[in-house]
Image (tube, rainbow, N blue to C red):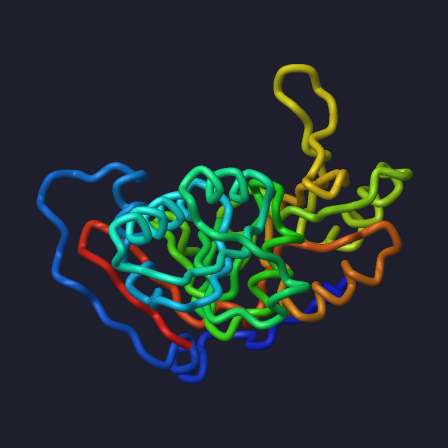
Length: 269
């Protein structure tokens, strides 16, 4: 049976090589000592905060990498190097972090257009498409980051993949709790040609379903093969009743900052 989501480009071509990013720059190599993943995340986060200017309305991301960026913004505010910043958090966890740092907060109702958002990603493909939401905040992240003039993504080089789902790790889908097995089975059948396995995300301690900030469940999709046309896949997922949102962020990132052993690479759309 043919896949319902054919690839945009069926084989490697000059077009594939040319449209990945419009520009990129590489900083000098990092120190020769082997850096931990957290150290690489922090380096990328600090580089991203260089885009922040006083007076901006900022989308504050969620996750281990974004945490370093939020910490840095709070530090610069305390030092007086940034002023009149307003933050829009993408999760309750980030909201609590920002409050503890003294970052003034608001919401999308008051600021429907943001200047900049900074967040991490779980996967980045060559076209700067992302998988996000393995921390469970995909819906609020997509709402906030979709309202930004500029969306800067910060990752270490382990997050780079040839295609979304290529890491073999989860592509999350937020669903309503009602008849979740029914919805999970439909998601799995949707991508059966890609060897999809759908699993409800549960607590390690007691096996209960993990709830998002919106009191929904998360079903994680695991793929053995490339799912092909991402926009077609996105549309098919969102057409399923019971689905709230998925973790593919397609054509949203404007800049991706990658920290690796050879230094910092900045990729722009």
